[in-house]
Amino acid sequence: MTSFDSAAQDPEVISSPLYSPDLAPVPAQKRNWDTWHFASLWISMAVCIPTYMLGGSMIREGMTWWQAMLTVLLGNLIVLIPMALNAHAGTKYGLPLPVLLRACFGTRGAVVAALLRGLVGCGWFGIQTWIGGEAIYAMLVVFFPDMAHSPELGSLGLNATQAVCFLIFWILNMWIVYRGINTIRRLESWAAPFLLLMGGALLLWAIREVGSLEAILEASNRITGEEPGLFREIFWPNLTAMVGFWATLSLNIPDFSRYAKNQRAQVLGQALGLPATMALFSFIGIAVTSATLLLFGEAIWDPVQLLERFSSPVVILLSMIGLAIATLSTNIAANVVASANDIANIFPRKISFRTGGYITGLIGILIFPWKLLADPQGFIFTWLIGYSALLGALAGIMICDYYIIRGTRLQIPDLYKPKGRYGLWNRPAWIALGLSLAPVLPGFLAQMGLLEAKEMPGIFTNLYTYAWFVTFFLAMGIYRVIQRPVGDQSPL
Image 1 (cartoon, one colour):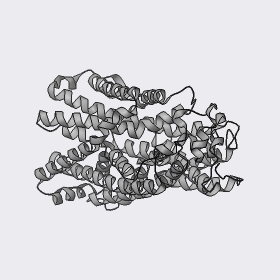
Image 2 (cartoon, rainbow, N blue to C red):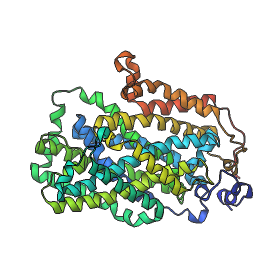
Image 3 (cartoon, rainbow, N blue to C red):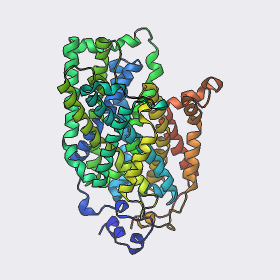
Image 4 (cartoon, rainbow, N blue to C red):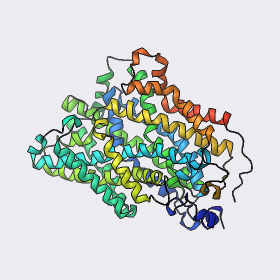
């Protein structure tokens, strides 16, 4: 009997307030994901509208097509490293992220640490829900143009029809949560292929309208042509944002890798599925956004807004329906699973996965996602870089604790015991988290407009540019210094 099987049958573990079936170790017979499962998981999650928009936003900020492609590919190769490292624990012990965090943050401290990750997932849920609602709105306006002139809702920055469409798509997501994650599997089987097909169709349309792919890619030089030093200024923020794009999954990848057959399956599957898919779909966003410079005189980075300019109602209708369904699939897999687990970890016996999903949905509304996506500056510099600082620190502590402090050895039953060897709060982890975030906090506050950037030393602005890298290595180094060595950690 394996250690995770024996832990799941331990009466003390099962009766613990820290235990629930959703957070229990995955038994050996259910650990059946192979290389293809992980590759297809990443293909389905990476092929999404935010991926397209990320590449397009780099063009709109001033990168050429090859600079944007280099940034996307390099960022995904970098984030693949902590992704595979954190996945190891999930595969070895069959445990989700909220339980693994108990080893380094303590059984109570892990609740707070998991919520920090979960809140970011709530934000992404809101963003994806807004994209799906925007697609519904675009369909309605095609057939009922007057809806575009519905009353504005004060300072919210959207009209009544947009708000209703957003809530319709939100309710659809909540219905999927109510029915259970299995309901989405049939949609996932074709959601990513549809987005690839739609992206490919947009690229072919752009080539036909402009005349050649070479002319499209050359158009991206228009923004940077008179500013040869611009790339150096925007490369690092965008690279940090690219790492931050999947910094969420680099933490909660154990939620998926706990089902892996072996370590080779999760490492190889992720290596095959993530960088190549992100590069391919980002390239489509990069090329089509470059083409809009020639066709419309502006860089349109949002594919929904671009599709709205098509003259054929049939094309718009079919595109928006497929886009909404594909966004629904990605939203559930990439955002709800992690956030619902993290919220359920607050009171495992009282908050179910379903209830955690409902709370995720409510928070997703409160972040006002349409304002984040209104401007690439806000999307990249405030949202992606801002939360990457937090998640970088968490990842640095987790990796240091699991590999350096404990040598990949954990006592599974103690992870479910309030008075077990891992304690309630592990102070070194929280000290490392706070100290690593301190250098980038002034830059974040300045980006939010809460501090005047001109009134503080430039070093803080520069450090914020490298936020994920700064907090990751600082947290890892500080934790290594102050965390005392542990005793025998051989798994039971």
